[in-house]
Image (cartoon, rainbow, N blue to C red; front, side, top):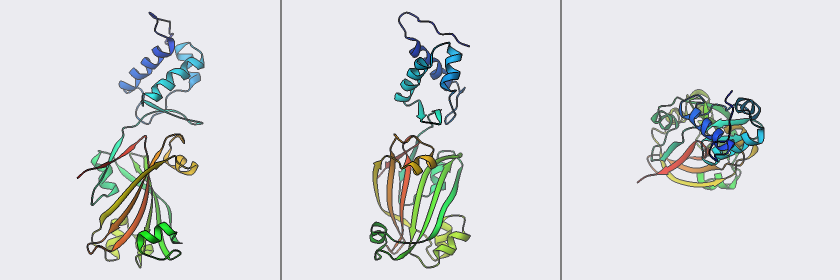
Length: 238
């Protein structure tokens, strides 16, 4: 127990914030790790929960922690630069940051194309397309929620058999594909997105709409990626 006392006009909550900041700096609490509860911190510092809450709110404003309603307070993770390039591949992006990529397939099925998807793929609204929805992780932490749409014959079966999109496209005759356009917007996450990405609902997500083409310029994919701003920033370079 570290009992706090007022020191030279320094409020108790500022002392607690400084102590927690030191704990984060020395690795006591690691990026993505949970901070003890308000009750536990109140007992540790010998103060009431309101004082602890004030300290945590200050750390949140400074970007050192993130407060998730109903889940607790967590040390903010390193922000990953997602550089938009002609060949942007998820695994390469994550390994570039010395982290291990992994993924979870949420959906793989045929659906009727909505107006936006149909326009991007050059189809009529309602035409059948393959939807591949995947949650992407870096060292076990979710960093992307992507919905990929394809119009290629045999793509559904190829994605069922392949280890990833690049391999599946090769199986249907697309040896390489390039980014043609990227459109980025921001909004608050839906409840489902916030839950899957393990992020607070009051922090925005970045939405990247991508059109990818083959070597002849034919459109092969329309993808909509959702990225949590606490962990990812999108970078455009010449």
